Each structure stands twice: as C-alpha cells, then as structure tokens.
Image (cartoon, rainbow, N blue to C red; front, side, top):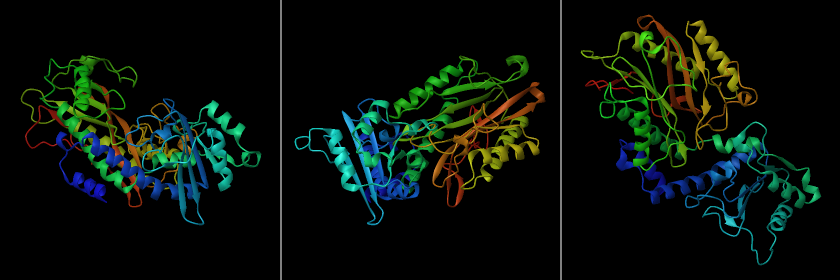
Length: 445
C-alpha cells in the first residue's frame, strides 16, 4: 500500500530531475509491481490461456526475454541455471510460484530445490511436475513472436529428455500466455507510465530549444548526443540511440524524402527548418517511444508558417482516424487497413507502423503495420487487440508543401493506452509545433 501511495504522489507532481527516484526506491517500486503482477494478474492470464503450469528456463547471461521481466530488482541476470515454475490451481484459486534454483528468486518466488536432498536439478523439476499433474505445461517457444521464444535448444532438449512419458503430450507453446504477460499493463504501472512519458516530453522540449540549438552552428548529431547525455545525467537509460533530422525547402535539401535508414548525419540546423526527433527512455522497467516536431524561427517570425501548422493538423487527423478504429478483438491488420482506407478517402497520404510498447520498446502484442508493410503484417498483425495494453502510436502522413516545392513527412509518435474505457494518450500528444527559440506563451504539447 505504501508504494501505491508513492505512485499517487509521483503522479501529482510536475516531473523534473529531482522527482526521478534513487535506485533503492526504484527497486522497492519494481518489486512491488512484480508482486502485484504475480499475485493478481498472472492467475487470470493463465486461466484465460488454459495453461496451468508455466515453466521458464534460463542460464546466466542467456536469459529468456520473459524471465528478464520477472527478475527481482536487485538481480541483473539469472544465476546459474534458473528454472521458474508457476502452477495455477483454478479449483482452489491458488497460484504457486517456485524457483528450481539454489536461491529464492527475490521475495516473490521461493526456492523449491534443496541440492543436498536432490543433487539433480532436472530431477527436482520433474518431481514438482509429477506432484501437481498439470493438464498443460507451457514452455516459451514461438515461431513469430521473438520475445516469446526464450527457451534455448539445449534446455528444451534436456527438459524433454527428463520429462516422464505421460507428460510429454501435455507440453505446449506458452506463446499466448507470454504475450499476455508482456503486453498487459496494471493500474500501478499506468500511473508510473504517465511519469515516464512526461519525462520524455521534457527532454524533447529542452532539446528543441535555444538552450541546446544555436541555428547555423548546432548539428542534428549534436542534438542526438545531447539527448543521450541528458538521459544518462538523469540516471535513466535509452533503449535506442535518439535520432534527429530536418526537412527544408527543395532548393536547400533536394526534392526527395529520406528513407528511414538513410537520414544524413551532422546536418547544420538552420532558420526555417522543420526539425524532427525520435527518442525513448527506460525507467522502472517500462519504455517510452516518442517523435515530435519543432520549427526554427526565422528573424522576425513569431510562429511557424501556416502551411507547416496545417501539415501538423493532417498528422493529428491521421492519429484520430487510426485510434478511432481501435476495438478489442479486432486484429492489427484490420485496424491498419480500415484506417489507411479512411485516411486516403479524406485525401490524406498516411503510413501507419504502430507497435506494442511496455517492458520492451518493440514489444509483443498487436502489431499495426510496419513502415515497409503497409498492406498488413502476417501473423503478428493478425493478433487481436487486447485491453490494458500500451502502444507507440507511430505514423506519418505525406504533405505537399508548394512553398518549399516538395513533399514532407509529418512523423509523429506518442504512447497510447487501450482499456475498457477506450483509447487515451498516456500523457497527451503534440498539438502545436515547438519553436526554436521558444516564443513566450507558446506551448508545444
């Protein structure tokens, strides 16, 4: 309860560097969230997916990506061979959380192996299985969802070689359970998520200001590394290197659109530029992913040109079309194609490439397009939208700018939450272009 009150307190604050928790308090929050997820979320997920025993097996420095999300806060890796067993007894409404390991797995999962009594770790695991007689034993293997494919060949073969014959037919892929564990956010996590996105917005606002950018001198690469240093100075991490790029008139830049993989480095930022960034942070085991835009004012300008303001409105319209098509049970491909069709019918030129976001940046769950797969994504795009999930609402629309004699892309990305009450942005979204330098009373978010 005390940590939940801490979340409420953090939620009520305007976030700055002083409100980012020190490591000891972060550990308390992480372990409290894990306890809540193990005790209150996992039983429902196991019931929903029909798996009554979930076994995760990892060795030190070669961890299953799902098991990594379960590590106690003071553990940075698994130890030796770590085996976790979750057994759900629906009839008795209980869940057992066992570690077939030499140590307790933090405070949430107790050790169920006494090596002095049974020296063989695999035999002890088999004893646990035989005692409980599960109907389905889930292991983390998957053809298409990389995060859910965590059991390695040697551990799988050793497990199957030791498993008694009567249980071999009960082994199934835990893909759906693993996806659900990774993608589902709890109430406590969503309170924290608001803070994460606010911190991310704050970093962007400072980066896209006169504090960091001196037009004619500062380069895009300078700003990228400033963001990286800022994240480090705050005691945070990033899950990808930030990117910054500019769009400007055809005469100055060349009348083409940069592909995602070949944006030029070290471009000097000039007055009249439309500047774009892509940045994400990791904090309290959650991730953000955000793209925003800023305009570099020319002398005597007090706001961005109207044609750029209107272009941003087109991007916002694509966001609205897209998120209005969210509905639990619809597949990512269905939502994608409906949204692209509606956007094009309105005269827009959208591209949508939205991904699940949470304990991983490019997480498991419903995939809604990829930048190079606008006709739909096989398998991953057929996964249905689930409640209590977070997405990086990542998309763009191409806009013709006659004043610049070229097309530009309005590229936007914000964290959004889908729940029983519908869709909402986790911490708002960009509705106005940021300006460099900042104009008094002009707010970018």
